[in-house]
Amino acid sequence: MNQKRLKVKKHQRSVQLKALKLRRKRFAWLKSKNRSAIGRNIHQRQFDDVVKQALHLTVPTNFSIRNHPDEAFMFIARLKNIANHTKTRNVHISLRNCKYISNGAIALEKSGFFNFVYGNVSEENKQTINTIVQQGINVVEPEIIAPLVTQAMKSVWGAPYRNQRVQSLLIELMANSVNHAFKTKKDRRWYLSISHDNDNVSFTFIDNGQGICKTLNLKFLDKIKSLYLFSNTEIISAAFDGKFGSRTKERKRGRGLPNVKKCFSENYISNLVVITNNIYYDFKTNSTRKLKYEFDGTCYYWELNINCISWNNL
Amino acid sequence: MGIKYKLHIMEQFVKISKDFSPTPGARYKTDGKFSGEEFYNNILKDKFRNSIDQGNILIIDLDGTYGFATSFLSEAFYRLATDFGPDNVWANIKLISTEEPYLIDEIKEYIYDAQVQS
Image (cartoon, rainbow over all chains, first blue to last red; front, top):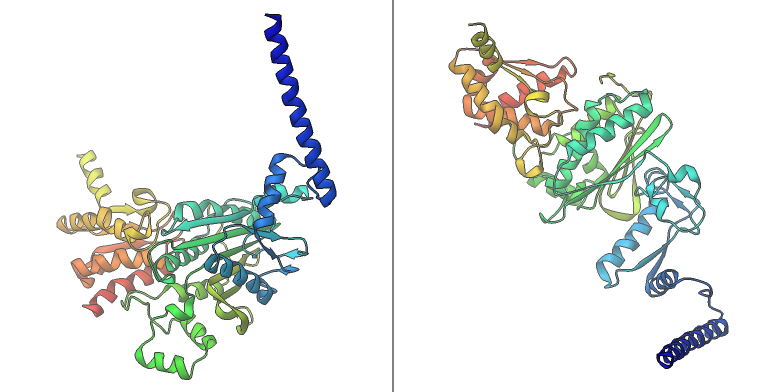
């Protein structure tokens, strides 16, 4: 019996010695290579390996769709390029150089995102009522949007009032994305991010479809004009004025975009910006500018604040 | 008699926020929940037919919802006008919209769109 125990103990000791030797060997190897993995646990080492094999991208210093659209869309174009033209699924995105992320920058800002980031993140960024991304696939989601809108009203007006115009606007945008923005009927996604900054709430709505310029119903003559005479700027401006019908060519259709403009012009929302294809359209200044990098899709940004009209209906 | 009278009155009244949904959606059933198509097929069509059969006016209350998309209203009322005729529809409905009065004119437009199209 004792002999058996001795045998087991001897075996255990040899296993321990082997493990110790391996650890020493690895430590010596890491030291010789000057690796940073010394003292890191297995999960951290696995993460390091993933990062090593991943493609690297650096978020621009000023990551803001509204204020620095060229930088932001260059980054997005690179990211899309990786997704569309490479087989790798691992992309390492570094925020090291990033000094400013605006409210509308693909919902990466002060929100739950930072709970998953390594490094120093201030407490105020960890606890927030912001909606990082509300995503919809192939359908309109009025039930999910309604409490988000009332929460926005609470931030601005102090109570969870309804806001029929903003709710209506969001349904129009979701329906546009689902019905018109994409070539195929599969995987039609839209994303909404809402950022609360005291009594100013900003909304960013994005779809990655074809963009407004490519999805309008242009009559034959308008098509010819758009090819040779009209710029994308004129096309976008005319689309929001309701001068083109819907792609479905039904008389009852094509009121979505004019309704967006009406919502802004009647002061139910403020600071409306629409970015689509290579156009940046600022409704406040009624001006457009051409972007260096084309954005395949449509991005709407607007704010809700105390200067906007509200009925205060609970 | 009193109960019968109450039921009779109830049949002539549609409050969208209570009888259908406080969060109406977009145009078609394929767009997602609570679409204009669903509202027309499940509620509006039958209510309007019953009210016409009984020689009454259908009262439609638009207040109390979180908000309407134009596509929801245009689908529901365009279909109604296509099936029953625009003049007949406009003469036999009464719209209540104290929160968003402009919706009444919009709905009238959708109803008479059907006439132009046909």
